[in-house]
Length: 146
Image 1 (tube, one colour):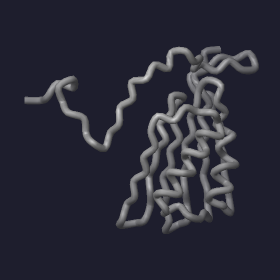
Image 2 (image 1 turned 90 degrees about the horizontal axis):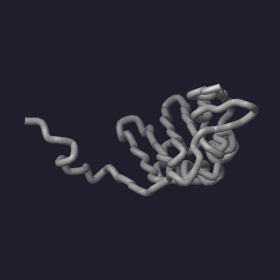
Image 3 (image 1 turned 60 degrees about the vertical axis):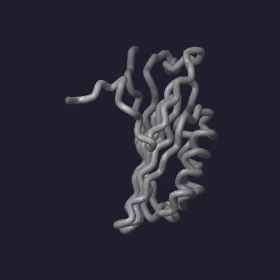
Image 4 (image 1 turned 90 degrees about the vertical axis):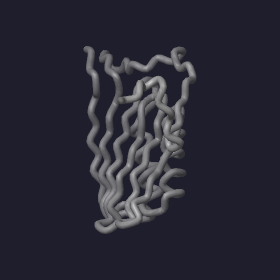
């Protein structure tokens, strides 16, 4: 019989935060538009240090702090077979994620933020940390209300 979600025990790998963040405005109101947030996709080619779990975690934290985001949790997982990592900084304002492929010197970042946070401020932090030879950045407004 399936367990009810309220009675299931939480995995030790998961951290739940129940802080009240209602005081902040999480919609973006800019240039006459209202939307849920800005989503930035960043591809780095020819990168360094993308297999160092501690360095990746520290860089995700630094990038989030630079954007004035509220960090709820940072987790980075290493894949021993390939040396790649996947990481996430869970933010009150959304998230920053990374997935790396050291075998082709490639890292994919996903930066989504709402409210007063500017996800584009994370890009120079990531560039300084991983020193890519080539970069592509794609920016989207998500949840456009008007």
